[in-house]
Image (tube, rainbow, N blue to C red; front, side):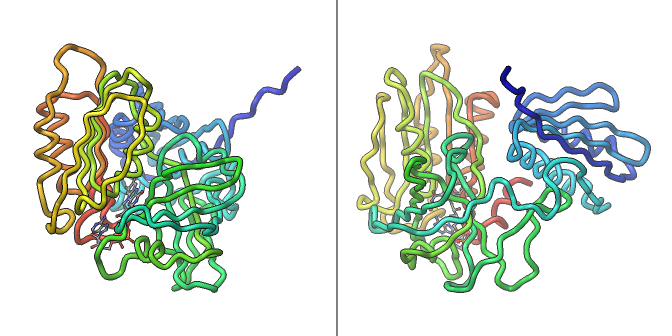
Length: 367
Ligand SMILES: Cc1cc2nc3c(=O)[nH]c(=O)nc-3n(C[C@H](O)[C@H](O)[C@H](O)COP(=O)(O)OP(=O)(O)OC[C@H]3O[C@@H](n4cnc5c(N)ncnc54)[C@H](O)[C@@H]3O)c2cc1C
């Protein structure tokens, strides 16, 4: 008889002065992503990766987490810890998970990768091909990864491990790698390779763009993931973004079926940045060129999205957007308030923020 697949579980008891309001904030947050049920002082959250049970007790919040594999459990623990620490920031509660995924173990969603090829896709877009082991899980479950760029070439990098609270535990060193989010433009699991298309944007300190510009064969980079919201099934799609979202849009288009219609609006620096996009879907594609205006300073993309006629015949629609923070805010508001798209009908993400770097920009974004 075939063995039943085992479930990975962990639990934590977190001391809190007022656990119920914290539980309620967690529930409200995760409702954006999946099913949440509340029954008095108990709740059950589907985080999208796996499930968590919460119980608000006297002076503590009891949490149990469950995932179908080590990675799913690690993501549940990570998501809960990050949000709990944000929502109870004044108390700085200590979270110590018991069960699977012990503190100090390697992050199950981490891979060390090395550069095997580079090519210039357009004048401002560089493709870096990275090779690594056991990439099967990166082929599904989200389009993007976090890349960990070592500070110095030739110095063996020290990678993060699993922290007691479920978050990555970083080495106490000035050489701590810089982390940036990128899209898997293409993946070949059999060859053990992925392509990342980097925008070579302007700026001063910018580990991501700098890594791509200087990448040499054999350079090492860390990778965690994959992650990201899923694209809903629909007959009609709106895909809107700037060049940072071009790799994601290209990949989404490649996976759309014949019979679907995709309205695509992409903002780029100039005409030389346009790329050939392949799709079985019927395309209505417009490139929006900034022609000299710096990235993140125009409202071209926002206006183009507002000019698109949304179907009014009741067919299933899905709108996706990835772009600079200001445009993201306007487009998300428009999709939610003017177009009245539900949670299942749209996904809007800030890919970067003018004047902010890496995760700082994203933390600002999620508040
Ligand atoms: C889910 C997701 C997927 C992404 N996928 C990709 C991808 O496939 N390819 C890609 O190139 N980017 C992608 N991005 C965007 C990328 O993570 C950011 O642009 C990131 O800030 C780049 O890091 P950096 O080290 O080059 O610059 P940072 O150190 O983060 O920033 C340095 C300075 O440059 C500015 N800056 C950052 N990005 C840009 C830009 N594009 N144009 C102009 N100025 C900029 C910042 O505002 C800051 O002032 C993605 C982001 C997300 C959230």
